Length: 315
Image (tube, rainbow, N blue to C red; front, side, top):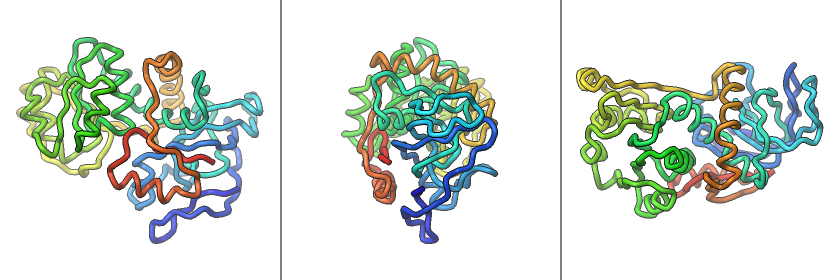
């Protein structure tokens, strides 16, 4: 098969590779489309290695057709979306059965590939962990990105007031169109001062850089969920401030979870989020679709900071 290889200089190149062999409980999927994530950039730079025993090929989500059902009893030719620990930047990928999802009704392969990772990430953190409730105020950092555009729509559906940060008026306008109520350009305004003691929940992709400000923004009994580290891995925490607010901080990652834990998240996401995709309550947001051989270009676009929503590679 063809697959994307990361060269020593971190450049991406389409090359020949062996088809993945199936382990018990896996199917082999012929990939039609791949979602591009910032985690892919981190892995290409050597900062986010795949879990042991996982494919070294980039890619955490895809959509395609089952080519070999292995020992699972699934149907050859079935159209599926897939949550992965790696391997998607290729013509074929091996997928544990519990990480297969149906293609949402009315969705193309490209559209399905753009929502798998964000849907599972947002739902597992906001729906299953942090427990969003109507009337709460939720702060979303990176509101115009893949996670942000999805989280805004889910939160509004659940009846929350949504605050977002983004780095340009264009991006904030996109957030507003999706339903965001409070728009903060982090280059011009301190979100912690604007939202001091107001945020019941915070979804944070930045990490260390925003730690102290996030705690300032938390409301009483507030809960911050850290899912990224774009702003570094080490920060200083004012424990006294956190104690005074009875605040909670969670930090989660989806990729390295055990298979059954991922399967649990996939089942819950399909049950709770897929109907919202199918009836249009939550819409996918694709910035651009590029061919697989242009994976390098996709990474450069994402690094450049101008992408809103998701980039997708067509295979």
